[in-house]
Image (cartoon, rainbow, N blue to C red; front, side):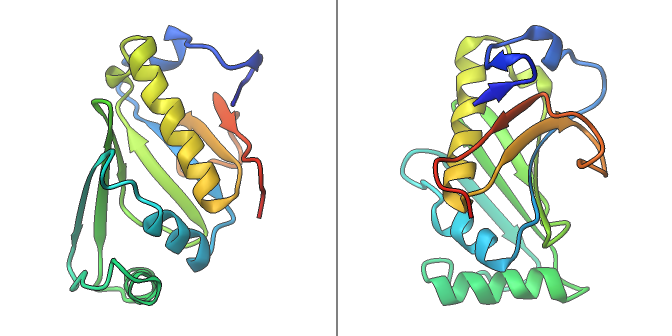
Length: 158
């Protein structure tokens, strides 16, 4: 885990409540990356909620997850929301784009080192699950053009 200035540290300035949310993103993703993340959800350790306009049966199998994700991303009438609670911090995914995983959270939730630890644990889990770089940015629709406030580089990169 790295911050913009080297080693990661909790900086209150990254979490000022300014009306903007913060985004956790993985760029250049595909269905396999999404399937790996959904399949790796630690239901026994974190709170996970999934809502969809389509039948979500099959989340227990790789084929079922793949079918669900393909429907979400390629059917204009389908939508979904996933919420993951880690130590009191909630990360929300609305499955906007196949090519970019985006989890949004409220900076107001990062109140101390423990909450910051929940954030970094989530970023590390996400990076390891899909094998790709994870960044935290200010809320944006173009995560490529703004600087990362934090980043995590997994041990194995896909």
